[in-house]
Structures are given as structure tokens and as C-alpha cells.
Length: 172
Ligand code: IMP
Ligand code: MG
Image (cartoon, rainbow, N blue to C red; front, top):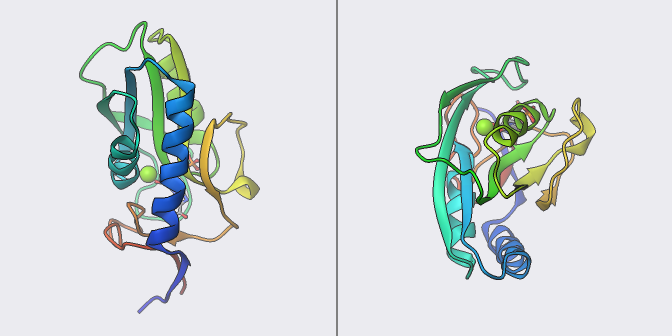
């Protein structure tokens, strides 16, 4: 059985999400903002963030495939589920679980810019800056973490561990 060591307990995650929500409220005083969650990892972050904000939010999701069952990216990203609506002329915040190599987000940013939103920002719960291969400007970051493979609070390993309340380092 692989080991699990708590890196970020649930209470700390919730407190930080409240701070990010307050920052978003200050940045978008009139709303509405489209929160676009990247399935599946961002599902809990997006739902907690949306409910912690006062700014009116609309929820959308996109699906991508890239990782397969391993711990490192295959480097190939594919959109498996697109938005249900047009976001032209709208404020959009893309909501991601973790930015690792930056390949996924740089691909999605390129696609989303073609949709001509009024503004496009990125929120991520976790950031692993040591592993970056593509530069991505991230506007809202929950926590910067060391180069460890983490699970919980939406993050998985081969689809397991997503519903852990804490974020944990997955050992061997
Ligand atoms: P990137 O394209 O390398 O930035 O990868 C981003 C995606 O890789 C995230 O949306 C996660 O699904 C996955 N990922 C990267 N690091 C981890 C990790 O430590 N645990 C779980 N998933 C991860
Ligand atoms: Mg993911």
C-alpha cells in the first residue's frame, strides 16, 4: 500500500480559498464571472471557491486528457469536453487543481483566447513551480508546493484518492 502524508490539512485549504475568493471579489466588483473548471481535479476547488465568493459566478467545465494513468504528463493535451456556452465578451477565470509542467494550461489559454473573452485569468489551488516547462501567468495561487506527487481535494492518482479531505503526498 502506498503511504499518504498530509501536506495541507483541509482547514488550511478552506482558509486559503476564502482569501482567494475575497481577492476575486475585489478584482471583479460588478461580476458576473465565468468560472471554468478543468475536470475532474478542479471540481472541489471550484465549488468551494464559487461559494466563498460574493461576486456572481456562472459555472462551466472543460475536460482534457493528458496524463493517462502515470504520474507525469504525456505532453499531449486533448479537449474531451468543451464549454456549453459562448464566453465572448465575458470575464473568465479558468480554475485548475495544480499547475505542474504548464503544458495543460498553456494549451487551454491558447484555445480560450480565440473565444474572445473580455478578460481571462487563471486560478490554481496548487503550483509546482520547479517543474515548469511552459511559462504560464497564474493570477490566483492557493499554495506553492515542492516537487512531490500529491493527491486529495480533487487530485488523483489513476482516479483514486480524489475525495480525501486533505492534500497528501503519495509515497511508494
Ligand atoms: P501540467 O500540464 O503538467 O501542468 O499538468 C497539470 C495536470 O497534471 C493537473 O491538472 C493534474 O491533473 C495533473 N497533476 C500534476 N501534478 C500532479 C500531482 O502532484 N498530483 C495529481 N495530479 C497532478
Ligand atoms: Mg487534472
